[in-house]
Length: 153
Image (cartoon, rainbow, N blue to C red):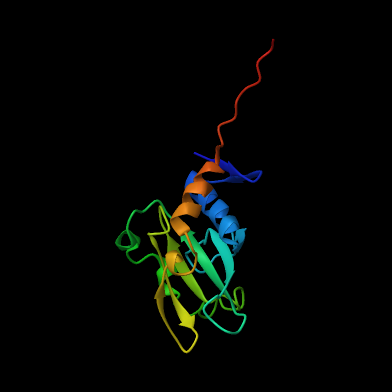
């Protein structure tokens, strides 16, 4: 079932809700970035780091799937791209910091990348204030992609 957000068609309501969430969170997003091997990411997102005294922007390639737990992603290709995109695909995505898995809410998100003097696994709730509230608002911005036929009066 398709969905519409901001005048754009999305393959699923979940993808549309993530797009709305990204806008509400102040993240920049693009749909359908170039494939990485056998993985076709759903989004390329960019967000700034509020944890640092320096202005830093991070970029993720995101897989969106209707999973309600991180474990359900299993060995999904998005999770094999920690700390960047490896050769031979790095020429298509030179500035990407990691692949990421996004499920049915901000509670079901994960990626691993370098951050500051360290790095590790992160999720949306660590980077977006009031993520749950924004998620609820994002749901209200998504419309069904079902086309209604015009009726004659």
